[in-house]
Amino acid sequence: MSRTALTRRHILQGVGTAALLGQAYSLAHAVENRDTASFAAVVKRRRMIRKYEDRPVPEEEIKKLLRYAVRAPSAGNLQPWEFVLVRDPEVRAELAKAAMNQNSVATAPIIIATCADIQRMGEKYGTRGAFYSLVDTAFASLLILLGATEQGLGACFVGAYNPEEVARIFQLPSHVRPVGLITLGYPAEKPRKPTNKKIPLEKLIHENTW
Ligand SMILES: Cc1cc2nc3c(=O)[nH]c(=O)nc-3n(C[C@H](O)[C@H](O)[C@H](O)COP(=O)(O)O)c2cc1C
Image (cartoon, rainbow, N blue to C red):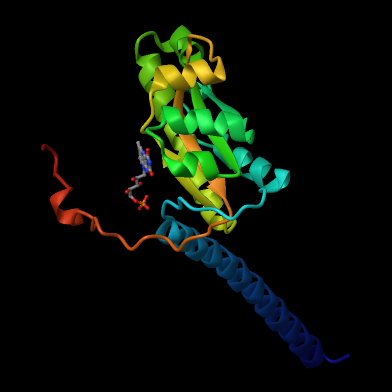
């Protein structure tokens, strides 16, 4: 084989490899962009859904949401969250009463009640622990809400409830506080149009000081 032919073949091989590498690079980029785009879409699409179809949410879907939840950031990685899953209609009815008779609480096929173990945090962080445990559990709750949107489920974070009543219904130990009653199911309503428009971002941003 002549020197020229060798070189040409090598050049062609080089071009081929570069093209392949280029393709692989743009594929990786496309996947990355698709992930980014789907994250943006989920964030935009997420609205509270309060009416649900009368059919159960499969166990695997619930597990997926819980697996998202436990990826939330956590102070000292102490992971103060715990979850009470409520499917029993009688318990849901009791919870609805404790939540100012909110119908969505009684009718959702399942409620994921996110709870915060104050003690788990308090042992390391003292009085700050209570604050951290609520923040962490709220983060975990948001991941459940976003996960529900991603999976085509509807969810609502219910925070208007009597905490003592909810603690009694769940028989929570005194160091565990309920955070959110997340009602969950297949949506039977379109998300409401935002009546409460978002406060313009410029009004919310402060530079260096308030
Ligand atoms: C701390 C907290 C408590 C809430 N409590 C309730 C509640 O008890 N019942 C309810 O229907 N929605 C409740 N929501 C949902 C809000 O009403 C809702 O997020 C808000 O109106 C904005 O609508 P969107 O989430 O659909 O964008 C609560 C939200 C938060 C963050």
